[in-house]
Image 1: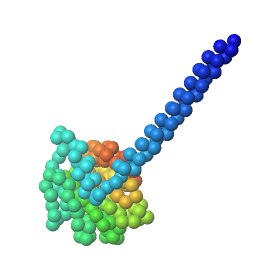
Image 2 (image 1 turned 90 degrees about the horizontal axis):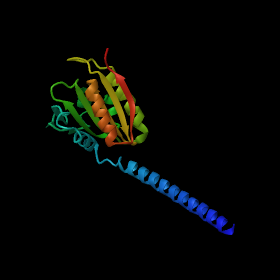
Image 3 (image 1 turned 180 degrees about the horizontal axis):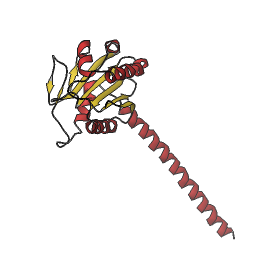
Image 4 (image 1 turned 45 degrees about the vertical axis):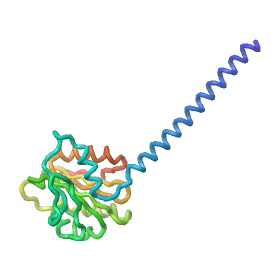
Length: 199
């Protein structure tokens, strides 16, 4: 009888020990996942976002793009955008003049043949408290544009962490691919707006 009780006691202690190890492992996994996710939003500048995302496109997914602004255009790649050129920010990317002061860094990538097929802007908002207001003004300005050469289908505005915003409008399928790749590369991304531009 003592022997049987001893074996049962030993089995129970082993089960408790194994259960305890499992809990520690889960806690470690959660902590590691959180650290990895936080590290994923360490971004140097807006151009890095587009270079990272564009780098995930396969040859069959890519299309002719140009980046940058009127004075600093880049062919076949994203480019940095001069934020002091407020008129170009509005004309090319849809950033209204009253929101331009919120950002100190930007980048762009656009379909080379037709900007309404795909146009994307990435922005660093200097004060996290202004991020939502920037998104709101950007959305309103793009939604109320007078389009030429056809309407884009879809607009998305995405926040990454507290200081970065990415907007893209264009063909629904191209936007969906871009959104999927962007959110995969930056897991902390949040879709702030996803709107139809079709009238």
